[in-house]
Image 1 (tube, rainbow, N blue to C red):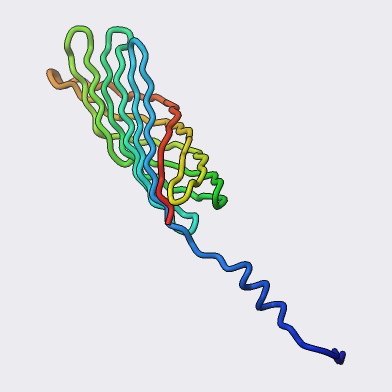
Image 2: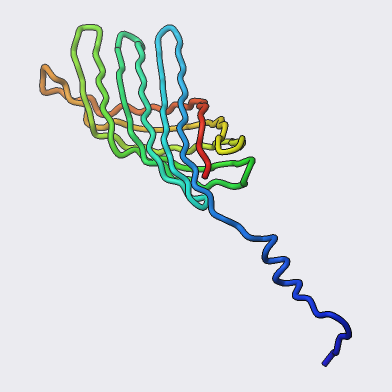
Length: 176
């Protein structure tokens, strides 16, 4: 065994004090919109993040006039994510749709409806902390399908409506 002369110090306790880590809680809200002559899309997302792991909910709305049809839809998804970093953050996550409503109106006023939606997506968000606030910029991509579109006036069915959309979002968060 080795014997040291002089004063003994415990360097391990000094290092562990420097490495103390306290989990953060983040509350975030993001919103994005896209408008053109024939279409409008919006997305709003609320989430809570604790110790890097996040859960949230997003609502995606889309209205368009395409080839004699008017499309009006709304999807709601549950979002799961992980956030890397502390003051500068990167959040990666995925979305799964659990509810929605689609209405398609043809040029001769025939209306098709469906609330049977399936789909998923992914997203990434960059964040910068300023005190207890966080400035956020993100990108969302979604692919979804409405199945069994039913006509209101007749007993005809339209097989399915499939689409994918991407949208940039900005937002603000609170960090504790």
